[in-house]
Amino acid sequence: MGDNDNDSYSESSTQSWGSRLMGSIKGVAFGLLLFFAAFFVLWWNEGRSVETYKSLQEGKGATIAAKADSVDSSLDGKLIHVSGPVSTEETLTDDTFKVEAEKVLSLRRTVQMYQWQESCTSETEKNLGGSTTTNTKCTYKKDWAGKTDSASFKKPQGHTNPPMIYTSETVTAANAKLGAYRLPQNLTSSLSSFVKLEASDAVLAKVRTVAAKPVAATSEGIFIGMNASNPQVGDYRVKFEVVKPTDASVIAVQQSSSFAPYTADAGGSIYMISQGVVTAQQMYKSAESSNAFITWVLRLVGWLMMTIGLSMLFKPLSTLLDVLPILGSIMSFGTGLASAIAAFALSVVTIAIAWFFYRPVLSLILIGIVVGVIVFMRQRGAAKKAAN
Image (cartoon, rainbow, N blue to C red; front, side, top):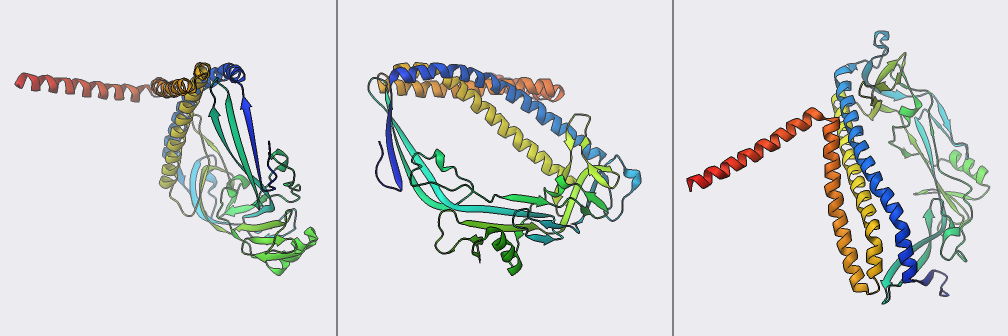
């Protein structure tokens, strides 16, 4: 059922106990898939982490310092670190509005349209007998945003968004230079210190020509529409930003007068750029920190996958007991907690086995340390008992 308020919509739906039970049984297959996929993610992640670590260690020992003001041909094919000014003589042009920016590394166009936005909240209650009732309330307001498909709204009537004619896009210089070296476009695009491009009369004129509508410069960008202080659905806000010439540091293989990725014996790739004059040591330290962060994030992802998978395996039990909601809730909490604990234990075991597989020497050292600590603590405890 729905209400008559144009800016909000409410609905209530009921799902029978039988339907919920069948749904939970069907979910068992997906739960199994998620459960076993978690082992793959955890195992692969440990291998990826070791590969990256070994590659970075190899890179550290192989990196040679190079000067940016000239290209040393004797360094061709070798892993180098070089710092210097990044610049270009290119004039970048925005494909849509034909706005130009001279001698910049990147030109970014960010487009937002004034349009309807939907925000929904739902509350589900269990009923005696196992059915559930879900109450959903959606509110609608106009705001600046990227593409929003109003056809997927709960109540699209009266909240229709026109298709977006203009979209966001970034153009990057293809012929940038780092000192005497040619900087590949995929490295140039990694320099992302964007600053606002001034909305000059020339820029406004080009936007006005393409839009065929009034335009105005505002603090948030260039407004396309009749009245910037009273925007209407379908009005646009366009912001142009550029990356100006800057200093940068690169670690990569010298390939003639340019750069290419370095493939380590461990299998990892080294191809890094940092904004500013950054030492090779700092760049490798940052890469190691990033690798450690990704490793822990993926470990958490693997544990969550396993927890959710196990919970889905037990879901039919709690749904079956939902005939009496209190029993179903107790079972759901219990199986959820048990799933989290079991997933944690299995994740730790999987990571430990993967460690032993990928890092056998380090694993043996750690095992030796743990065994040594246990033996020491037992001997100390025995000595105290004997003394008493």
